[in-house]
Image (cartoon, rainbow, N blue to C red):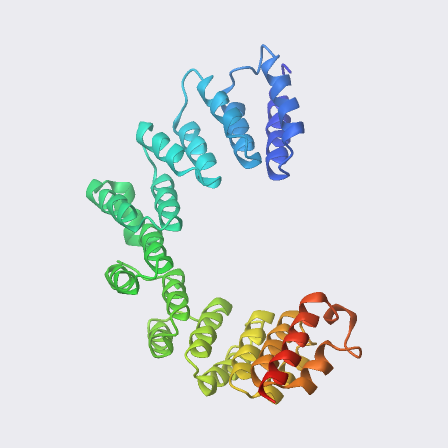
Length: 331
């Protein structure tokens, strides 16, 4: 282990172990490095070991490697913070955050995201305001150009269901990217805000952002949950007609099958499910609609003896039994 090229080999091996979550192999490489006078204490390899252990979930080993570094650099601190954040260890991540001699924008955004996922919106807001208060060149450049930090706090509010605050952040952002628009669209889908979703969709086009699969998925969900079936159909057909570059995915079909089925339009839902090759999730959604509307004939045909093997499963048989039971109760 005395040649420069061997460092590259060791680095590649450590990264492969991390990507494969192969803790045993990574530990053996670590032991080889620790026993080498040449590479023991090498900061570059140590940083990679911290990252590898973090990916494998062994945060004790990651911290031990960090503590053994004589002089951790900015990357060492960032990698250790990321290891805790990746594993959802908020308090440990915050302690590292407070100890860091300098914090890059990636670290700030990671902390924001972690707080948002935990629903700690007030704390996330304080961190965001602290970022803005710094007014250093790094934050100003980021906030004015790609809005990563704005999108992170926007997502935190949206995930918490605080649409008023999310809208305020969205409107106040220096630049609204496709991520910003999709985050707002996704927030409306969870609250059946069809009118607001459609308004956002049109404003998105006016500002020159083309919708993608995620945009249409959110729109379809919002309209479906609001009971706007005809609007859902118009969007679904518009996606196929006006946005042929976008691939209609099973989630789009399933949303439409679910919307049509719940509205009692089981024939249209069945045709759509069959056009999609009887996707298992779409069929399960249709079976749920059969239970609601007491359609024993269709339910039997979908999950009964004549159906394909993937559809003859326990959950579908359970839905079929529920349909029989619900129908018998109203006869």
